[in-house]
Each structure stands twice: as structure tokens, then as C-alpha cells.
Image: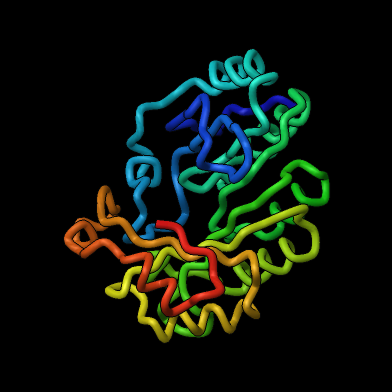
Length: 229
């Protein structure tokens, strides 16, 4: 299975110590996304404007350096929108490196498939807002089917070897009450992480004018939750 023809790569980090906790990982960023989150810091990737990179060159570099790597992170954009995503995971399996997937959770069918086949070893999935209100569509920047996000969450809890759920927070974008509502809806999942919003490079120019979120404010509100930022 080697058909990568439609998968577009817009970024590559040969070595990262930050993108997968406890791992030295190569990071591949796919172009394009089916969401338009206003605070997204990878706008060029989302809009398909990043400088294209040949996938075969990335794969050759990863295979050459696999003895020095603990794994590969496949991020974006949104990797699951590409038909070449599944063949890519099989290629990493052939190379012999575990994979972490970053996803918005919009494709539960594919997520269940790759988890069932043992093609991903850790998943970081965004939970952008509380369910059951307009806030999720506002946070995603497009109309969405919330049930798909819920189904992806169920798939992670049933089948993922390990996972984390991520929420990016700014008081201008989500209220404290909404953040607490997410915690309740997730059942106080110990794998939930809250990230402090950074205005630099936000997809929506209006978000670039917002203040940086303060991690200490999040810690005071959610003392038992892991915070980044």
C-alpha cells in the first residue's frame, strides 16, 4: 500500500522533543483542514499556502534516521482528510516507527480503522468547546456534526493505546463557565490538557489582537488539569 498521490505535505521537522511527550520524534505536517478555527496557529497549512514538500523525501529522511527516533508525529492541518493518510501510516509501520496522530476528531470511522489496525500509538484530539451549544461551530469556524467528535472520543477511550484531549483557551473565546462545562462533559478525564491561547499567527486576524491567555488563570480555575503555555 504505497499510494500517497493525494497527500500534500506542508511542513517537516526532522527532530522534535516537544511534539510527543517522552519521545524524540520527526514531525510531518499535512496541508489543508476541514475546520477554520479562528485561533489556529498553523494558518498557512490550513489554507494550503505552505511551501510544498515532497513526501518521498520526508520518508527517505525518516527511514535513514529511524535508529535515532522514537516515533513520528503526523499533524496538520488535518491529516485524516487525505486518501493517502492510511497508506502513509502503513509505510511508517513498515519502517518500524510508532506514530502519534494530531486530529480534530471529525473522522471517527477512519480513526476506528487505524486504531483497530494498530497503526497509531498515541492520539491527541482537540475538544474545542462544550457540546450542545453553538460554541463548537464558532470555535471550529464551520458548521460541524458534533456526534462525529463524540464518536471519535468514544473510539479513543475504547481502542487507543494512549490519548490526550486538548482544548485551547482564551477568555475572549471561551468563558470560564464553558471551560468548566467541557471538564464536566469529559467526565473529568485525566487525559484532558488545556493550552493557553497564543495570538501570534492566529488564522483570524482579529484573534491576533487578543491578549495571550495566562496559564496561571487556567491553573487556578482547573487545579487538577494539566496546563500548557
